[in-house]
Amino acid sequence: MIKKCLVCLLVLVALVVAACGSKESKPRERPIVVSLFTVELLREYAPFIQSKLPDVELQFVVGNNDLEYYKFLKEQGALPDIFTNRRFALHDAADLREQLLDLSRTNAAASIYAGFLDNYKNEDGTINWLPLCGEPDGFVANKALFKKYNIPLPHDYASFRFACQEFAKHGIRGFVSDFQYDYTPMEILQGLSIPQLQSFEGQKWRLAYENPKGDQRPGLDKKIWPQAFERMEAFIKDAKLQPGDVDFEYNIVMNLFIQEKAAMARFTGPLALYYATQFNMDLVFLPYFGQDGGNDWLLTYPFCQLALNKDLEKDAKRKEQAMRVLNVMMSEEGQRIIAQKNDVIAYSRTTKQELSPVLESIRPYIDANLLYMRLASNDFFAASKLVVDKMLKREITAKQAYEEFDAYLRRPRAKKADSIVTFTKKYTNDFARDGGSKAGSAYTNTLRKVYGSEIVLAAGYSFTSPLQATGYSAKMLQYLIMPNSLESFTKEMSGEEITKLLRIYVEGSKNVEPHSLVQPFNMRLLPITAGMEYIAEQSKQGFKLKSVTQKGKPLDLQKKYKVTVLDKETYFRHKAEELLPAKGESAFIRGEEFVRPNWLRYFKAGKPMEEPTAYVKVE
Image (cartoon, rainbow, N blue to C red; front, top):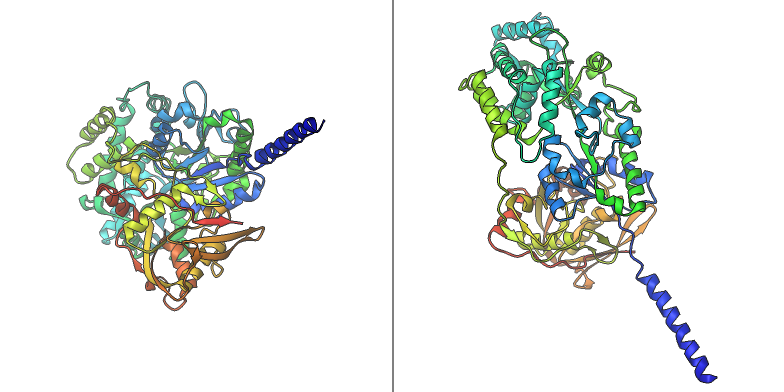
């Protein structure tokens, strides 16, 4: 009897232990990973999404504005759940298609005007990408300058040409643009031929180009595009563009425009609004005037496109959560946050269209649906820059430009870039409350070696993705670092100063305008440290820094340490001013280069990736 009771007791104990063990080993809920193409979206847009979905575990990371990056992650099985991209064409996204969810039957897709949605349809009718609101692109005229010289504002192409001729008599450029960047020649080349590109023949060609079969490399057609280059050639002559314009960058154009040495320029809606408000200029936004008569059009391009990983179908709960995230991202309120200055165009019928007074002149084109969405494949960016530069320099004719552009599109695919380093260990980007991110720690520990510092403090958004056990090309290696100009700031600091700076990063900056920089609204955005550890306490009000240690011992508040801070300069400036009101950022030595080239140089020298260490505990 005693033996029987003893057996029962042992079984009971085993069950209790097993129950306790199963509770402790219960897997953490995997977050929905949202990759955003720019760090700026972490300021207001991401906190908004988080606030609307308090029951969903979310991890926001800053990705790269390049589909090649997502193709690399796809090959490694590391594609984010939701990801966004600004530079986009279906042509470039073809290799991702099999790994993306079909969104054609979602409410988010149903809300988008058919004319825009058609640009995202695959030949079988499926849709893998959805556009957020769009930026208008056109010509902007300084009304005061036109009035000063008694020159009529352009209302068609003939009056645009006349204005350029008249301003030239006064030594003023009629039109300028920043041709140094690849997007400018591409947009002007397409903008001058929108009626033809929107014709039946033009749309038929675009459909064929955007949906290549296999390794097919579609080129230009023989009807629409030869005439497009003839219009570009005429425009160069009529606008009196010069060979030296190929080197015009943003600051040159800005100075010419605000100093009234140029009357018109190619701007986007946000840029036009910036000039009007910052320089108190009276501006009017103009469309691309058709040289051949007919309707004038506005060129637009989406603020970004977004897609969802097909792996979400493997888990019904995670897919449901991701769809809720999608709906919030595409909601009117969400798009209103992006369009807070009323300088973008709504692609969705459920979003009320509001425009700033500067852009009110484009409303007739919106109401008449005279909106063209640019074709923006990587090849179109590169080929447009290549041939338009030569046209500006008068090195080739329109016919030669067409032939060279066509040949560029038809050339064989470039071979995959060779790896310059191969990693044998794989580190996740998931955030553990007791330890932090293994990938983020490995990167920060490595950058501690790069900069030769005792302590490195990296903003929580400094890195883009987990580390894969594979070979990395130079490009993909640099893509591990945040793309939005991550910089380094180095200074000898006391333990007391380090603690104060870390507190600013953990608890958020207090003396700044709301949403002027990224605040730690999510524990996965807490700073990543190397050479020291810290404990943070989480509450509904945010985070509090509890303690700072170095190898488990309290950080010496009097001792001086060489510290490197990694952050975006405009964000770090606020934090430095809060830390050192008298000197601010000037007290730090700013790196001569961004972090990316230093990171690349380190690995090219054959040096290793450092092991991760536990750097944070969130209570």
